[in-house]
Length: 303
Image (cartoon, rainbow, N blue to C red; front, top):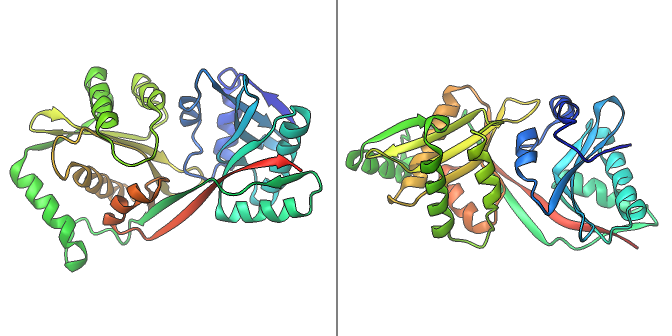
């Protein structure tokens, strides 16, 4: 196992690993970089044949964490790589805990493996995130029928009252985009936290790493930012960013309807709207997800 602390200098290695073994929505190199902060630094664990682990560490507290489902390896090897990383972090680095976020199947396999281990144990789950996924085959861009009546009414009313234009977010001024971000943070509801530095980095880097970045102008004013990318080794899309300034009732629904319409035209099979708590999930359910999966956040410690 090779420890890589400079993830920019060795970016080619990490990009190659994601390209070869990536499978999860958040497996995106620039997304990984944007999540780094002055306190929490990215660390990449490199293994043979291009496999790897996406991790972060707070050097001051020696607190380690796994980037969501950040195990870049064939499915049959993921748990072994994770166990090797756990051993390095908790034994070699003498960390008190290793926080992980894992989907249900990987969590189940890890817990089974830890039950056979004498050295480590899993703590209780501290948080569960809910990830709705939408089938583009089932998404009706015309919003016809009783199933789509509420969304159809919202869309018709919004477009009847307002002039809506769509622009590439990369062509919108950074000052205007940052103003949308500021309004979104200040007016946001729910108990899920916002990492402002992530979105600021995304905007200042002109959405590098995103395949699509879109802004709706309503009555001449930019009001939304949505962005995302194709999930590695799939024909699915991750809608990673959804920001709006709340200046119009129904703006969030309109931004998402427009996104889903465009993604369907681009022939994606499924669209992942990202993990959140139940408050935001309630809003996302308006668009009729095909399924909802969960990720679990918990810590691994020494026995």
